[in-house]
Image (cartoon, rainbow, N blue to C red; front, side):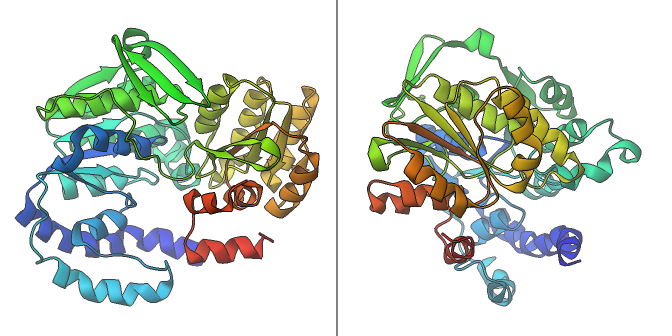
Length: 420
């Protein structure tokens, strides 16, 4: 009942804050870029920050219908408790009349997790440029009513149409992943000029190792000390295109790129292990991107997977699809954490001869991993079920825990409740 009420009131409450954010936007008058999609939005945002630098303001740590108005107004959530909301409601009107931000460009990472997001953000932000690079099942349960009698043949079509609504409100330039048919189809919603990115035409080569990643794009090598899946190519190209659009000379030096926690971060672990931390979130497409990336790394690799959540009636279908895909990769062990993986994925992996120990909670997975590691393994973490808490106990340097995701007190408490 409470969850249903949150869904019903979501945009009603968000419009209260966006009303005051519009007032500050009118005084500020920035040129706005929206970056949206199912996967890789945050990486694309940070890559754009490398290209535009201090010329733009960025919606770091804010991507929702609440977070972006808060970012415009300068409101801050401190402890993510319900007790913060009265303060936020009362102070929003006063923040609306603060002076404009100094930057002339505003780059926004925007969620498209629910029907209506595009039509909320579009008229509110009036983007000049929109970047849409991925469309997959992240919060499928919110699109269930859109399927069948709701007008769409399937959830994929409903999700893609929702993202297309961002483009519909874009005035000048739409940058899209032209290798994804549903994105190409829904790009027809925009009247802006469309720039399509295709791997075959633009990506010359891709190489990843524990030393970092090199993308060679149209003869230019982009080097980063971070691990990136091949799909990051689309975000690199989009960031370069944005720079060119604003008359800025692009750079190929990605050494200053900041990667947010839980997005393929690399750590040294106990017993001389290497930890690849991609624990921030998960859907089938993002899992595939990470396992393909780590396949190129030398050494014995173990995959630690968490449940894919918020899939509603598509839960079984998505987990079984995940099982069939992961079964085709060469991992020494695949450790499953969560009831959904145990129910749907474990049988598929075992049918394909894969060693797949399964645990309901993260504490049990940790207790399994520590004695089983012989040393030197590459541990790849992807998914929900508080995997960042498992990683924290496997770090060689405990100070590295500060670089993991979900460090706020509310998450610390939740991990404790799971025995971490």
